[in-house]
Length: 148
Image (cartoon, rainbow, N blue to C red; front, side, top):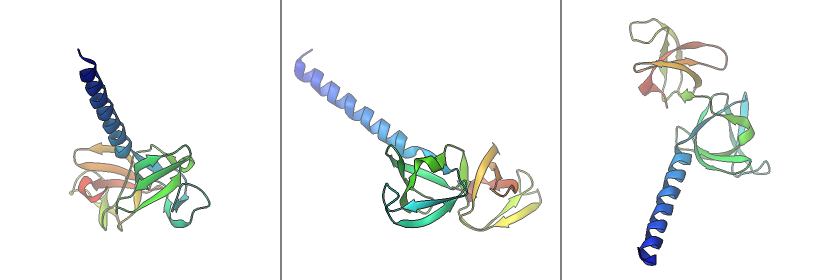
């Protein structure tokens, strides 16, 4: 094989690997692991606090540094948060006001009603239903299209 062909194959392979790595990193979700965390405008504690998020708030990872994570949330907002405040707990957040039920189906009683933007830890899944737990201990089931 000629050197030019080898270089083209190596370059194409490198591009595919870079694309796969950045796509995998971008697809990663993490969750807030503390009761409240500051979202900042940049990767450091000297940057402005933009807003705060609570335990189990899910975040779509855009970029990681040694100590900070740039993320996008369920509304498309972006910010930076310390990696020390995150973990890989599976979580969801409500897309709109909705009911949480005692079991995985519309035939189960409503346990409570929640507003848009409430985060939950995922305990399990059954069909199109997700078993959830709030940071305060409330548990129930929610239909999968109602959460992000």
